[in-house]
Length: 63
Picture 1 (tube, rainbow, N blue to C red):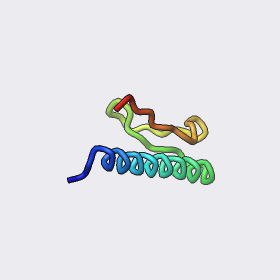
Picture 2: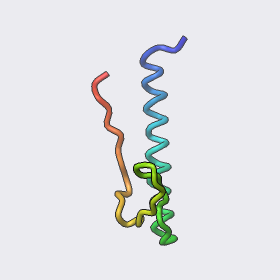
Picture 3: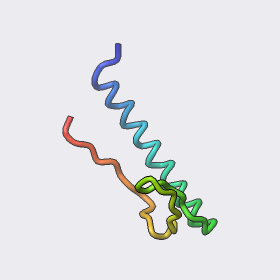
Picture 4: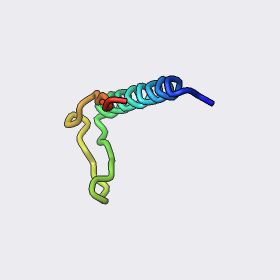
C-alpha cells in the first residue's frame, strides 16, 4: 500500500504534467493562430489563444 507521501508525490507529478500540456497547447494554438475550443456553461465556444494565459499554476490547500 502506498504511503500518503508517495501519493502526494504522484499527484504533484501528474499536476506538473497537466500544466506542461496546457502550456504547450496554448503555445501551439498561438503559433497556428487557431482558436481554443472549449465548453463554457454547456455551450461550445471558441477562444482567441491570445486571450488566455500561457501558464496556469495549480494551487492546492494545506494537506
